Each structure stands twice: as structure tokens, then as C-alpha cells.
Image 1 (cartoon, helix red, strand yellow):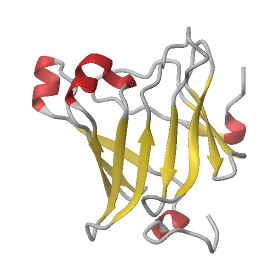
Image 2 (image 1 turned 90 degrees about the vertical axis):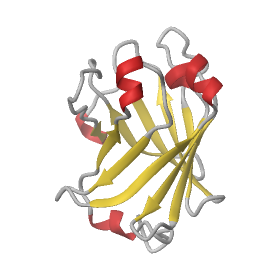
Image 3 (image 1 turned 30 degrees about the vertical axis):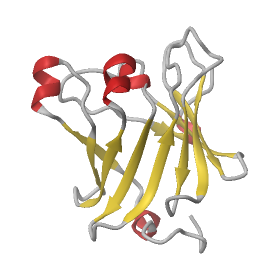
Length: 164
């Protein structure tokens, strides 16, 4: 980020690591029903710098699961919305590379500053972070195995991941 840092995102300038923790809802764990997700965003000292709230339709959560359309509001510790993430309903299977995930990033809300674009890969999650001009500025690569109860999933950026 530069001197053009949107208001409220200044704490990100001094961070080299971001940890995002999903707050688990008991009904989701017990019944396996997708609920509106809530997240804590913490720095490397485990201090909460933001929290995130999902807004999505209950029918989409039930019928479309993790592929659903959603809006995620990123809120700072003063209860000010500093960022908004918007994702349309898209496919997420590796067998359908024509309709992969895409998310618009707005900061402040209503002003697009970039995009997160899923890149096709048969085995591992791959994403490109693009600026508002849609030029890739960062690549993110995830592990082959992303699931596991109460386990962290680590993503790496740029030179530490190879494009297949």
C-alpha cells in the first residue's frame, strides 16, 4: 500500500502476516447447515484489528453452500466499515474452469480498489490479487488439503508458489 491507502486500512501497512479466524456457530457444527459467517482478523501478535460479517441469502447458503453470492463487511475496532468484499454466485470446482470465483474489493465501501481472482488448478487453490486496473500485483497459493476441524490453513504469496 502507498500514500493512497484508503481510510481505516493503515494498520495493514505495518503487518507482514494476517490471521483470519472464522467464528464457528454451534448450529453449523451440529447440523451442518451453512450460517452467516463471522470472522476475526488479527495481526501476528494475535491482536484483533478488524472483524468481518457476511451478508448472504439463507436460500443461497442452503442450496449453494460455499459457492454462494455474498457481501462481507470489514469493520475496524471503532465499528467503522472500512472495506467491503462482494462475490457473485460462481462455481468453485476444478472441473469447471470457465466460471471460477471472483471477488471485488471496495475501500471505502462503494469504491472498487481491486479484485481477488481464482486461477484454475486441478489440485490446489490459486488466486491472483489484482489492482483496480485489473493488473495482478500478488499471487496466493493454498495447500492441496484445506480441510480439517480446528486446523489452520496456510496460504503463501508470490515467489513461494509455482504456477502449474
